[in-house]
Image 1 (cartoon, rainbow, N blue to C red):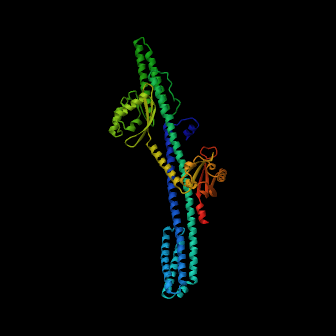
Image 2: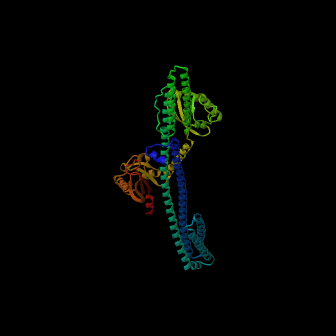
Image 3: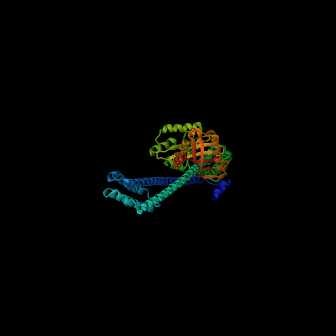
Length: 548
């Protein structure tokens, strides 16, 4: 945490590995939240569908039972009013058939019974059984005795009390199923919030992925190229050349200081070689001192090698003929190179080993020719290659002074897998929004122009999204309707959110006069580029007409 605070204040003491691992850790956390929110969204959607389907089916069953009870009562009246058994027979047959249908309808209700209506349905089922039994006895008396006996059996307080209780049961069940439908709507609202969170988390994951690329380019690849150029200048005899990035506190800084020590050692060696000794003793002394500096040079060389091997990425340096000048341990680990491949080996030998180990199946000669061509052109390159074992390696290549080439390679397999998961989540969220029954409209709060509509909104407005996107309400609707829409937008701007539905009547040039219910929310704030109004619209015109 102390290093993070110093980094935020401008005193960068984080190592390259700490930077890369920190960004990868944050990306993993965001990806985990994405997964959790995705599971929650699926769970809410499944619960919503079950509750909506069960409440709808239960309401249909209640309506059907109510209709059948009424039909049975009408058939019973036909029996009461019949003068003889012949006329009574058709009403009796109809009543028996309706009784069977009523029993089947009550039995079908058991599929939708839940904790909130179990007791009521049990009591209702018993009363229906009494009702059916009573009507069966009514038919028997009418057919076997007389219509008068049937009227006497049917005209009593017990029958009327049973009918009243059945009506009360039906009213109670209708209230229960209405409440269940409202609970399903509340679950749908929670699902929309979860979808919004998924979208925000996806944007955060993209920001961290972009930050990782920026850190790699700025902190590793560019710095290594500059240090490599300084090394080439020193090797060419320019011992006064400045070594960049000495002030850094990470692996790059240690590498730069090792190169500076190497430069100092080379400068001292050159100084010794320029000294002319007049005597053999002086010459021997100079050779002894030079040997000491050579030992120091070797020590600094080992320090340089240690600094390169401490990098979290694979590194290989090539000369102008694609021969290996240096490579670190991580590069050897990426391709599982044997000890026989060392500095001085060729790119072709590395490729031949990869062919034998199953990591490369291309044409070796063509690949080597392509590497030599890039070295000749001296153009930096960034590429990704997929190994035969499924790993994905990102390669950053830059030229070195003197015709050499440096390549930094990183295993980005896990990062690409997380990106693919994020893409699937984004497609999943987009599919849900596009296929919900409710119209969804997004508008830029700065200029009140439409920026998104789903399929349901296209159908409600009566225009394609190509005709809607980029226009204002005054360009699509009548002056009166546009003024009402802009008034609602100003109300939303003042209220921040508008979760309660507002019902308005709007004249639509394409679909005529429509009654709509709308809920509005705003995302972001004034002055922000992402400030938007999102409206969830429901067309209630047909429902209002049906109710009338």
